[in-house]
Image 1 (cartoon, rainbow, N blue to C red):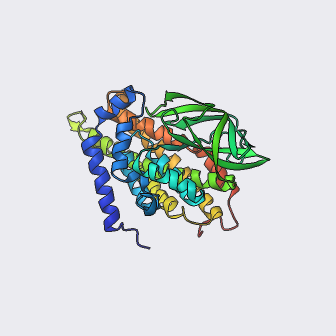
Image 2 (image 1 turned 30 degrees about the vertical axis):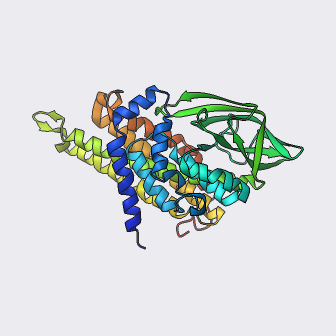
Length: 371
């Protein structure tokens, strides 16, 4: 199997890396955190590069690319621990392209691709945790339209988004709706998360909504799987940069007149971290390549990938802090922000223990080794 990237994919990687290196340094990120964790101007720059429209067909103003290109982009944004939730644009583009009516596509996809509209997935509820088949938010049909009532938690950039993809139950069956933030009955309360990014608690009280699809469980599972693939790729990029920072520190910090990177015990620790990083990279590739597989196969693959990424991100992040010593957790040092990012990513779309349970529940007679 050929795992080499095409020239187009390498050019895309190079373009995003150059933007991160030139336009998104640590000080700009710190300023964004102080301002609340989301910068519309930065998100607009990502959209200008065409990144918000990666999964959107060309006829709707997008780039018409696929999961591998999305993985490449999210790796580079992970290297820069970029705060703006580009992964949400990929989720929205994928779900609307795959499930929405032509009218909804024509209205929203061009705006998502251009960066004019930020549409985010609002699916988590306080009492459902990471179970996707449970939903307390209710939808009602009134006349020729729909309204949604309920509450969603930890919605990425929820108080800055222009619209939400909202799973809600109607007649005992889950569906997915598009709810504009500007509509009546919508209230978003924002806050800063542990890694400095933005999230919100969003409440809906008879909020006007547009039905995207009646096949709500399938659409939500697909949305979350796209999000998991983005999270895996972002984690790989963050781990790669964490390794670089740790190696640089070990080769600079001296004890007994020599760099501590020459100590055998620390070199072995770095080797263990590298092994975890490469395991994570392999599983991120696996996740992206399985995004277009049949639903059952895709769900198994994404659970396996997220489990391994959770183990690897925790191992690399925690060992980096230990190898740095006290400086590894100081706010002034960039390495501590990578640790916080990896910690938050490990919990995103389900923590490691949750996905271990998913892997176990979906295990077949072959244990999935050759699937």
